[in-house]
Figure 1 (cartoon, rainbow, N blue to C red):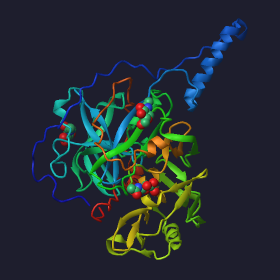
Figure 2 (figure 1 turned 45 degrees about the vertical axis):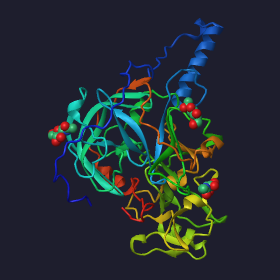
Figure 3 (figure 1 turned 180 degrees about the vertical axis):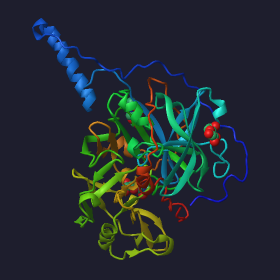
Figure 4 (figure 1 turned 90 degrees about the vertical axis):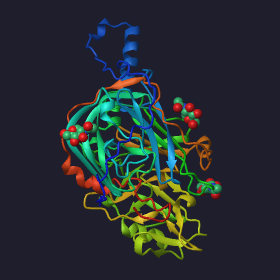
Length: 470
Ligand SMILES: *[C@@H]1O[C@H](CO)[C@@H](O)[C@H](O)[C@H]1NC(C)=O
Ligand SMILES: *[C@@H]1O[C@H](CO)[C@@H](O)[C@H](O)[C@H]1NC(C)=O
Ligand SMILES: *[C@@H]1O[C@H](CO)[C@@H](O)[C@H](O)[C@H]1NC(C)=O
């Protein structure tokens, strides 16, 4: 529940920093190609060759292939790993002039929101959005609220220029939030960028990524993550280098081999795959099938939650494990000196979770808590939420068209970033190389509210620091 201490004090905070960024250019990408019908006999061989190439590029762009010669755009955003893998945030900028904000990147929800200047409780020490300082802000005067697994945020909807990784959307709908439940924002994070599909957005409006990809702004219709691991590193600082988020391309320096894509199992909402098999210490365990195997691939969730029976079957393979009690209800303890090897398949290759990621935290001289927990999901919500515990072990790709999630092995270059202390990247939005215009249609999506409630367990389960369940 939200803290009852809201709105008791009014302290104006000014936005803590600005980014000098070039203003948006005119549209350089995403123009549609109109094909004109001509009589084949009028064509020379050269004509045919040009047509064939054009056609191939058009279809390739449309269907997400890789042989495109048409220059569209791609961008990267460097991430920060917060509190030993509890959450991963990137940066974007809002308004005219642009002001930068650190936001959790969350593939498990689909709304963008940032703390508003009028947010006083639990918004201290974070950059806040001040609409009066942006000449391009439009207030939609519609209320907004969203409930995550670990808290709630509420405020109102507005429209402004939003820039990220070199892309710009001129009229992106987002929420300015004046009510945030305690613990949802950890400084310097100001808000959250939902990277799930519009169908689960609380506002009903198209999320930033979908506006960009559907307008054709991206070279390839996909985005990707490489997430660092600090959970087992020494001298971990609150904020460490977190890896890379890309829009419009995959960075081949960060993975090896091929990317195995699995189509989404249902109409796009969450990034939902079927979790088809799992091994623990090399032994196959029984897991639910059908829609009970649906798993949301969620960068905004720290751990992996699944159906009780499956979680019980995991720990049944680990001698000395025990169901947790009290604030650890739903979790399991196991002997810390056991190296637990879990591997998961979504229909393709089996992907290993490192024993380091399985070991969430130590609770006694001999016992540790595992990162896989029993998720009590509401009806219709995904049975599994597969978060960073898993995603740190792979390069992950979220593809718009055909709608799919892909995984690949991390490269040596990517692995070499794990546990290497350093300054977190400074906020950057890149030079603007492509712009897009958001659709203005939107409707309040209350029918989907359940799924947001149950599934978008953002940075939520952060018992890593201090063992406190939020
Ligand atoms: C937008 O208007 C609503 C009232 O309709 C107001 O409550 C809210 O504070 C305004 N938002 C901003 C960012 O000024
Ligand atoms: C790809 O990742 C490597 C390693 O982090 C980085 O040096 C390079 O700049 C990235 N490439 C692009 C195009 O972002
Ligand atoms: C942390 O875990 C990873 C994956 O299991 C391992 O490769 C690495 O050596 C570990 N680091 C430390 C400092 O133990």
